Length: 410
Ligand code: HEM
Image: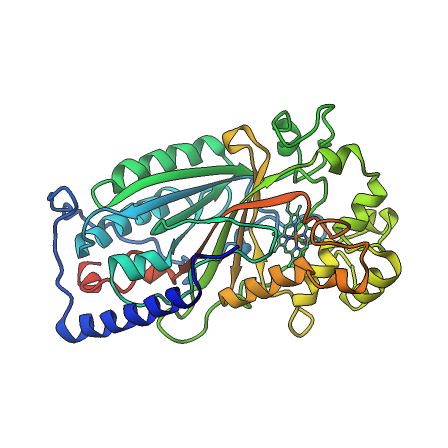
């Protein structure tokens, strides 16, 4: 259970910082050729439509509120993962920026058009720009997971309500960006009533179609009620080089729901999802808040020997508010039920604190009926297989942030 990190990793970061300082002092050489020796073409840069939000992650204003005012997430998502091809040049930044502006010109900003963010990983800063990264590399966050850490440079998160459009946009981007960005992987998914039910005949979900048509997610509960989410404002970085940006953690999880649906009653699932003090009758009346009082967590552990996921996660709140904004979606990538957990937060530390709260790894010391994965929220049903951290700059900085010479090219 290690990120391959520890002291060695820290030493490397110190080393990278030194290289960065040397690079700045010497002036970083900017090559206009990519790996195969071909220059990235100088494309024309379309005008950007006016009125777009400064923040890439400003999606909420465009989302249709449900009957209680909770924003309805886009129904379909794609994560496109790329590496920078060869040496990054100002022309590379211009190529990406032109492609993204083309999307903004073609589709209105919103789920009926298109929403997207561009996020950059520590590998981009350290390996491509050779400067120290503004965010840490991802790592395992519990004793019961050992995720592979992705090293892709760029993650484009695309979302809208029309899956055919999303697929066409994804294909278009992969080919347009090819001179500057080598496409490595696409992850796909969906969220919203009807979609998990329609995709449930996969490994990880038991037979008998247990996922109801009303379920927006495979596990059968509605997530992301307003008060259980951080606001976009709260996850926005204020000041510094990434002002108006945010950070993003992308985890790929496998779901194993056989015992979730076969061995547990609905009441038991409610207890594990929210808290042992929460009843199905209360769940039926949730509007903007899944009230699973984090103040009652120690009672849950001592008296009930059972932890609810929402109650435990809410222990990470600051001033009574959650610190991560979840934009996760279900998937059947690889023919297996899963979840792409996309979380936005002001700092990666906010995610680490939330995941640590969700793990409740010390509960066993108080009540041995609870272990890391027994009677402990949804920990037994989700397996984190891959994880990566990204920084999502403001819209004007989204294409090859901090690349020397980019401003002149845009
Ligand atoms: C299959 C995976 C998951 C499902 C189905 C799920 C579902 C839920 C549900 C139904 C709630 C109740 C409140 C609401 O959002 O309306 C909730 C709350 C929450 N979950 Fe999850 N969750 C999952 C994974 C995770 C993970 C991996 C994390 C973070 C590392 C997380 C963090 C949170 C947080 C922070 C809250 C809100 C707590 C608060 O109110 O302060 N969840 N989740």
